[in-house]
Amino acid sequence: MAEALILLISALVLAGAVALIMLALHWRRKRRKARGNPDPARDYAPRSDWSGSRGLLNYSCFVFMDVDGDGKFGQADRPMAGIVVRAYDGKGAFLAALRTNNGGFANFPMSTTKRRAVLRAPGKYRFCVSVPKGWRVSTGNEDQSMRLNAVPGSPAGLAGEDLPAMVGLSPARFVRGIAEAEVTLSLLGKGRLLETRQLAPGSFHLDLPAWADTLAISGSGLDRRLALSPYPADLGLLRPSAIASEVALETIGFDGVTALPFQKVPCGHGGLDWRNLNALTSLYVTDSQGYLNGNLSGSYTTYTSSGHPAEFGRAEPFGFHSVKLTAAWLNAEGEVALVESWLGDELVASDEIALSALAPVHYAPMLKAVTRVRVTARHYWQLVLDELVLTR
Image (cartoon, helix red, strand yellow):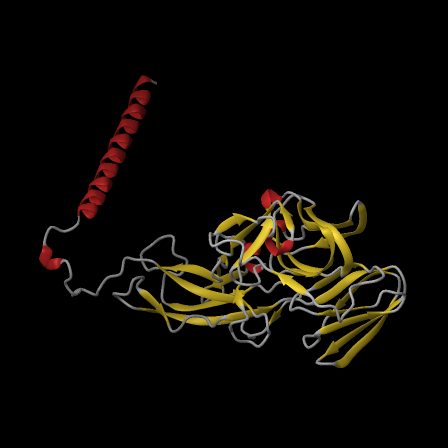
């Protein structure tokens, strides 16, 4: 028993000694590398040996929100964060699933020498974009195969025949709401009537054709007209006396709040008082899907501070036409926003809006007169607000 204990202690001591030696060698190499080469003649010498490659490089798949749906990455479009892209080898074996970052890139590490690389050898690979339910692939290429070739001397030892082509996704478009009486819903495109539906009292949900640009509702005193956005629309509870279609609308954005990357929205911006709302650039928060996907200007948007209730308003009544709302994080996909609107001390509207971190929801209550609007996340996740539309 004693001999076994002695052998065990000796083995542990030996293992510890080996570990210390390896650690010392590692730090010695790092120190040498940090000191650099003492020979000035080699400071800018052209590389002569191109036989090896010891680096790592990202092989990237780019996904963008095709806002105008034309299948091209244009000025109206923007990178999408949080989209899952999967990689498979030539035999169909699954390698990895990564999400696109704030730049819209799913970056697969590529190297012939680094163990953490996903792509490690020449061959054919397949890259598949996971398309959110109801969304449309405007570029028609969510599944692509590419070949990687051995290229000694390149940073990773590999290079693709090309990068995967950009993948464009157009948001699912629908209109939903609650009608307390029978109404007629009409869809128009470029001034032409596309579809008419009779809605019975209760909840309704209607998928929108890609070419629909205007929604009209008539009957039971609920008449209203809404210019449709590229995103789903939620009308909440249809209430009488909506904002008339000929009234001038004013859109309040947040690009003019500050030149800093982040700042609380000050009272007076857009002629309103603000509480618990912060303005920030789309890249201020790392891996923040909704902060990017819900930023409609490409510069600044605003969100509910620490996920707590936020408000905007003023003493003089104004018309609350609409606002774009987005869940800030994919972990809050399906979060519900309670939007309450007051005229003085009277609660004139209260709607619950289901949100996504992938794209905004166009909430359009079209209320003629309010003095205060409060937005609350049911589970206290941050919500992104942009393009607030009012009447004065």
